[in-house]
Image (cartoon, rainbow, N blue to C red; front, side, top):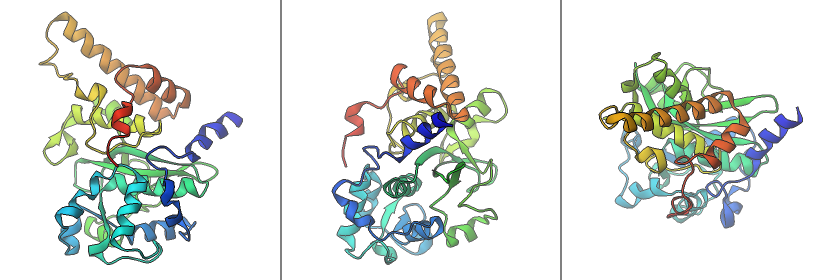
Amino acid sequence: MERRSREVERYIRHSKVTDPGGMSWAFEGLPRDIPALVETIQGFFLHIHWAGRYGVTPTEEQKGHVQSRLVSRILEVLVSQDPAPLTRSRPLERRFFGNCRDYSVFLCSVLRSQGVPARARCGFGTYFLPGTYEDHWVCEYWNGERWVMLDAQIDDFQRSRLGIDFDTLDMPEGRFVKASEAWLMCREGREDPEKFGIFDMRGMWFVRGNVLRELAALNGAEMLPWDVWGLMSEDLSEDAAQGDYGELVRAERHTLLDKVSRALVEDDDDAILSLYRCEPGLAVPEELLVAGR
């Protein structure tokens, strides 16, 4: 029980990404009730790829919001567009134009600031396009007994458009597939890798990238969805694995990713930490983590 407590408690500590820094004052007055907090966040965020369906056309400057790596920067953008407290819903044209990762990381930041263990999970949603697993991020928080998974992006408008009939604030198992789960599903032949991804980017290489992003997020590095490092940049396809050496390298890399995925699925905290720190190609380079704002 004590060990479990330590494993959970580490998700109260801010990462470089979730730390609001000098902008922490902007969190004052935000609700502590989960439904109210999520609704409040939805009042100042707007998903960049959904904006048109809300009747909004982002400016070129607003299209750049998704490059905001740090929560402190997201807060700066929000305040610069509208100095009103975050508890006040903003007009659509003055919101932060982010993506699923931003909703999830921002919620994690608020919850951690409120003393609630929280973590962002990278993977795939099953509720966007029938028969596919769409690149997506969600948030988990510890309610004192278990990790509760929620999707802070899905508001009433999206719920209606997508025909969602389940509780997005306490997600049923299987609605969101963690990247680690997806990797094992594909490796074991239980699912087609070409169903996983976004737009025209699909396949095992995409799943592999999200596994590294999921691992990094649980090690205090909640990266942008297009960040690339380590094993992501290696061509592990069968065509590239020419000769005995190529096949050996490919097999070793896949075995390592199997091990990483099992640790993430089993929530094996010791393995999650040690694999990230010790195995080459998994950890985010420091220069990438601190790059930009």
